[in-house]
Image 1: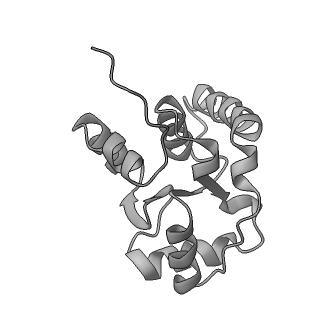
Image 2 (image 1 turned 30 degrees about the horizontal axis):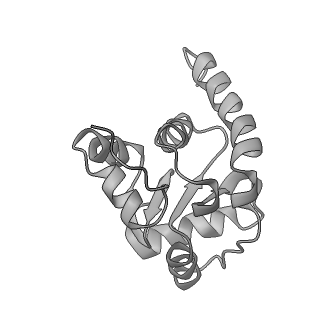
Length: 145
């Protein structure tokens, strides 16, 4: 990302700082065994699990999307694979479990939704918020008429 990504990287760093403050509590306390079974158990144990890398622009865009949808910090676990000693093994476990070898990996309600492209497409179709609500990841607000 030597050309044209400086703004994206700054945005990713800014989001990482926001996530550390706003979503930090959600990131503690979940240990993911770096096996397909361990990943499946972890994904089923939280409403939303994101496998991410801090330098990945698509990961930053996914986290920005989730932030904009006001996903509850207590319902979200973000695992930064590049900061974890088991990150490579977790990414391999995701590939073994789901067939997806790239990050970000967004799990909602224990099921892999996909990466940023799939999440953005689901959001555009109006399907992402209902999935997040059904998984218990969003506060239920009354619709204003």
